[in-house]
Amino acid sequence: MIHLTESAVNAVRTAISGSTEPVEGLRVMVEAGGCAGFKYMMGLVSASEPGDIVTEQDGVKVFIDEKSKPVIEGTTIDFVVALEGSGFTFDNPQATSQCSCGKSFG
Image (tube, rainbow, N blue to C red; front, side):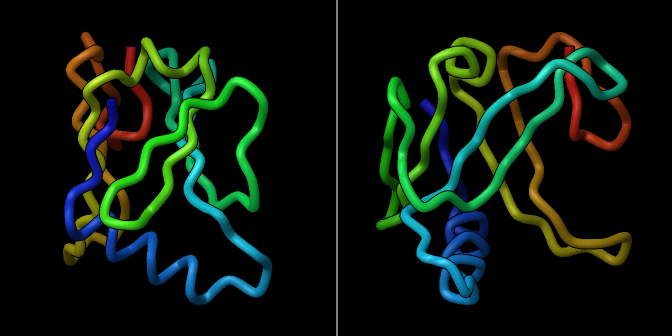
């Protein structure tokens, strides 16, 4: 389904441990928008929603809604630390194009 690199798992674990609210896992989804047609959305959530696909990697639960699944199937999510800034990156085999920031795709 979706693969989180070790760096991404560690970043999510750090975010979960620093949260002041109860967190069950990470929601990954796709919405219409961005420069290229779709944009990635991620956030910590306290529970799954009806119809979610739930996977777990190295103790981190990932929730994906049914609409996003076909568009992000096979995506690898990494967390990169660089001089230009740190953040999550997406390597999506379903994307035929993407914007220069790497946060939206078509």
